[in-house]
Length: 184
Image 1 (spheres, rainbow, N blue to C red):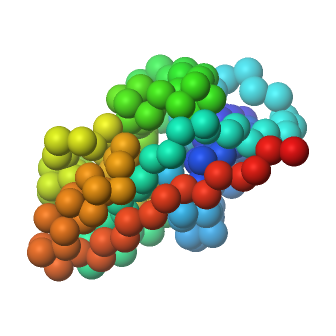
Image 2 (tube, one colour):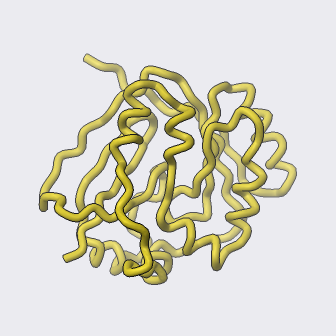
């Protein structure tokens, strides 16, 4: 069994859990599509794991951009060639950046192994990424299996400037502030 370590950010909480990749490839779009970070292979993961939220002490903003196309999650996973995939990446940097509020580091560390597959067949995703790469943006990455791309921004003003610039292209654009769960 090939186990992948799924890393998701929902709001400002990072969660991870191991998963059998065959269950993902058999899926017909039932994976959560609203998560900021995708997956990477992580050999040696236990069969069961608990989700543990990670709070971020710093406010940041996301600009989400969706071109007017659809991408099937099942199709993307079927196109992924595991023998060609790079060695597993260390996801602890994502957690460390969130915990410390290092949004610049988080933006630099963001990755999505599915992005290469999608960009190769759906070039508008690369167009969206290029359009989002502007001053004040800490990182740009495809969300999940695409085609939505997000930009991490340090300020509301930068997020709205970026959104205004890319909205002119006719893409769906949303600016949001990740929700911060209060700690007890």
